[in-house]
Every structure is written in structure tokens, then in C-alpha cells.
Length: 573
Image 1 (cartoon, rainbow, N blue to C red):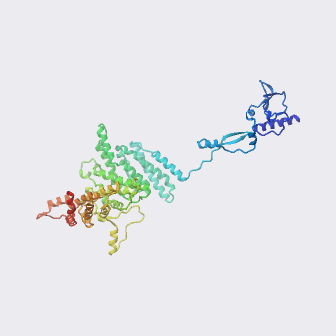
Image 2: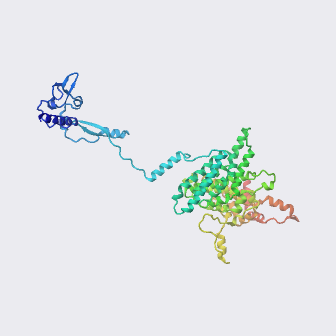
Image 3: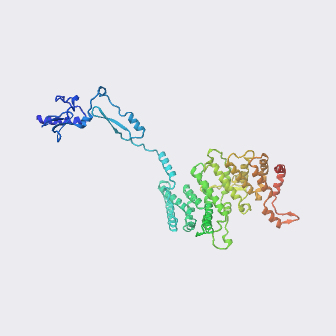
């Protein structure tokens, strides 16, 4: 029993010594705290009990006995009076070194006690990471998309088989989207992923703009037909993706690049004429399929105060401008290999816009809007930039020969009001009996383009434009107004609205608008050279030209009565 009690007690003492708990036994064996480790080895043939600081074992160097514990001898050092005073004090969890480590980006450490007089620093556990908010997740996704804009865009390989497969896939995805929208009209989540896939397939066709020779396959495999169907999609973002792709495919600069390459590389398979024919085939297929009407309808459902929709308006105006440039270059007429000129001849884009759409009314309505010039005027899709772009497209249309020769379009003072096909309400008013209200409503349903142009110029009758955007807008307005005066029906309204007096006022004030005003006066009093020459060749009686409209004659008389000669003659000095 005595030996068993000694053995159990010695095991407990050894565990307490390793953990660092003071032994409950007294130092009766002569092993006090002060003389621990005084002897390296104490010989003993049998285990006589635990000795503090020693381990009972057998070694080749000393034999059997109590050997000094090297680990505890290192940890056990003589204590100083200061250590004895601070022995029972609670040590802080962190110190200055820990703070410095934390400031330098190193892992945070915390101190723990080991034994009576020793502390060790161990790394602390990292706190639980804070979950980002939805707005932060959206910002991270947008930043990733901006840094890798084409990471999610799968571009097509340029060969006929790939284009055919992509066309079939686009058609099937569109049919599935229409089915899902019909089945789950009140639950957009059901068809959201399908429309994202549809948008990706549309954007994939941008790669075709690299090789104009593939344009014929876009028509052959009904890709343009699918694009026309997508332009009437309920989701405006899908329609704007189609417009963005068409802007890339129908860029007039592609023809110039091809012509330059054709001049440098003589061994090219496709000549410049064939390239022009391919671009004309794509553009004519789009126009003949009703693309102009769909573009004009889409531009009415977009809001300028939304950045994405403002970008859509800019893309539609850019596409319209590209089609007008291609038409003016004669590319759209080169779509048939037949030699018959009458069969090859087609209606111009300007004639289609004036006869079948309300695009002119929308342009005048956009120019009439009052937009203050602010710091955001330099943004790509700011209202001021959109107004400038609208004036450029309007000037291009009005300077086309089909409009100036009165082959299409009405006079500017009685244009029909613009309506959007995507509006929920039907805009057609109910018929009203003959009364004074009928005239008022008819006037409200009309857009007076001549008045819009004159009011836009009147702003600068005393002051010069303050920015480059204003200056360009003013020049475009003068060009558009001068081109409209080639039509005699517009000259009557110009004189009636005191346009001549306004131009003379700009000349008297000697402001920037004076140069444009002089050009407008020249068109107002000179008349159409075509109408005068044709009528003079056929209807001369007694030295007078018969059948010529008196609008230009009245414009000359108004110019003299308003003191125009008094303003014009000093300009020669």
C-alpha cells in the first residue's frame, strides 16, 4: 500500500510539474525552490519518490537514478524581487509588440501564461469575415465587368457553318423566350435567364463585322430576320443589343478600310465593289424588312434620364446616320446583279423616313427641348450631346435631294405629331364635329418644324455660343434651315414667321450667328435653280415666267422693306 500510494502520488506530481502547478508536498526531501537543479544526477537504484526538477530513468552516461529535467530547467529560472512582486498580477492579453504586428499587417497574437513566470505568444483566431451588402456585391460585379468587358461574351468563329448554327440557336432561343413570356407573364424570374442567354447570342454576332464577306450568310441564314423580330421585343434592353450589333455591322468606315486594304493587297479575293455589294445587301435587307419603322418606334420608348436608355438613343441615331451615309454613297442600290437600272433603283432612306415614319417629328421635338449646359455636357450620352446629334441627323435629311426637290415629305409647318407604337394607349383622338375646338386640336396634333428652327436660332441673335457643343448645334440648325428653303412651300412660312427680320437682326448685332444668317438669306431670296430653269424653259410668255411660285418674290420684297440692303452693303466695305 505504501509503495502504491507513493507511485500514484509521484504520477500526480509529475503531471502537476509539467502543467506548471506547484506541488502540494513540502520540500522535505531537501529539494527546495532555491536548490532545484543544483545536481545534474542523483544516483538511486530504486524509485523513492518524485523529486522536483528531476526525472527517474536509466541512461548510459550516468546509469539509473534521478536525471535533471532539461526542459523544466530551461523554463525554471531564478526569480527576481520584481518578478516575485508581479507574480500574482494578471497579465494583459496583448502588448505593444502585438499592436505593432497588427499594424504591419501580420496576424494578431495573444499572450498566455506557461508555468509560473513564463508567457508565450500564440496567433489569435481570425474574426469571422463580414458579409458584403447587396450594393457592395453589385459594385464588385460591375468593377469586374469593366475590367474584363468581354469575359462573358462568346464571339463567333467566322465560317458559314458556325453562322448557320448560331442563327438556328438564336431562332430557337427567341421562340423559347416568347413561349416563356406567354406562360409566365406575371413572373419575370421564369424567363430572366433565357433573356440573358438571348442577349449573349445577339452580342456574339459583333465578330462578323471583322469580315464583310460573311454578310451574305447573315441574310441567307435569316439572321437579319431574327434581328427585325427582336427589335419589337417587350424588353427594351434586348432591342438595344440588336441596335448595338447593327451599328458595328453597318459602319461606313468599314468600306473605307476595305478600299484601303484592297489598294495595298492586290491578291485579295473580294474586290472593293463586291464588298460594297455585301454591305448594301445587308443594309437593304434591313430597310426592306421594316427596320426603319422599328427603329423610330423604339426611340420613343427610351428615357434620356436613364443612362442605359440614353445610350440606346445614341445608338439609334448613329445607326440612322450610318444608313443615310450608305444611301448617299449609293451602296444600298448595289443589291442586284441584273443590268436593268429600273429594277436596281430603289427608294432612298430619306424618302422612306419621310413617307413611312414620324422620325422628322421626333427630331424636331428633341431639338425643341430646353437643356441647360452643365458639367455633364461632355458625357457621351448627356442630353446636350443627344440634342447635337439629333441636329446633325436632321440636317442630313433636309439636305437630301429627295426632300429639297419635294419628292417626299410635307412642309415643315404641318408635320404630324410623333407617336410611339409601344405606347399602351391609342393616340388617335375621337372625331369631333365642326367647331372651333376642331381647329385647336388639329393644331395641337401638328409639329411646326419651321418655328422650332427659328426659335433655336433666336437664342443666339444677341449672344455668341458659349461652348463648342452650342457652336456645332447652331451651325447644324443654319444648314437645316437653309436646305428647307429650297422648297417653295417652306419659304412662305419662313417669311410669315419673320425669318428674314431675324436673320437681319443677327447681322446687325455682329455675333457668331451672322455668317449662318447670311447663308440663309441667300437661299431665301435666290430660289430653287431647278424650278426656275425648268419653268423658264417651258412657260415663258411675254417675257414673264409663268407658273413659278411667288414665294421667292415675296421674300425679296420683304428683304428690301426690312432694310436688308442697308445691312448688306456695309459688309462689302
